[in-house]
Image: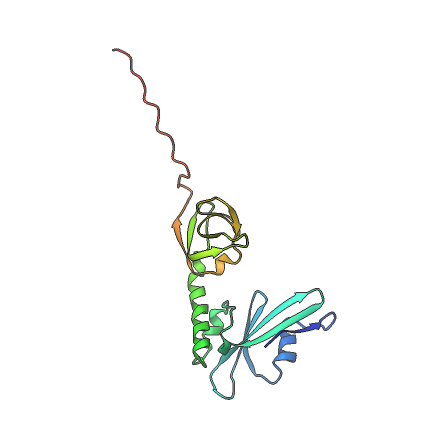
Length: 193
């Protein structure tokens, strides 16, 4: 189950057409969706008669095009399958497919909590280890994929954090939230009356 790569300089096909023609020839495709560079194809295998999913990972480097075909029964890592596709499926062929489908549903359920504002603080279920060797679990949102690590204030990048469902919002800032409370007014010194 490796990658197939080829030169796609002037073939005149879309990625979907290429995958269907060269990789899925003879498979009856019932529906298709794309998330990023991953394609999800619904098909009905003759052996089970239940709708299932083929996941096609793709990658481009210049004129080179790579594709890796995975059946849902191997539990693909990419869990961005749209609900529309998941709703067309029959009984999962095995436990790995059932777990993959559940991860896709869980990801969709958590997709609404991705709107953070600068200053919001989140905590992941487990610490994240970074390339410099340090691990952090709590972060303050700065912008895009940039966060300040909890205790150190170190700026870190957490790619694809919006797709993760394993974090909770600890501190929410808002238009009326004060980042720094105002100092109390100095007491006035009253003279003798």
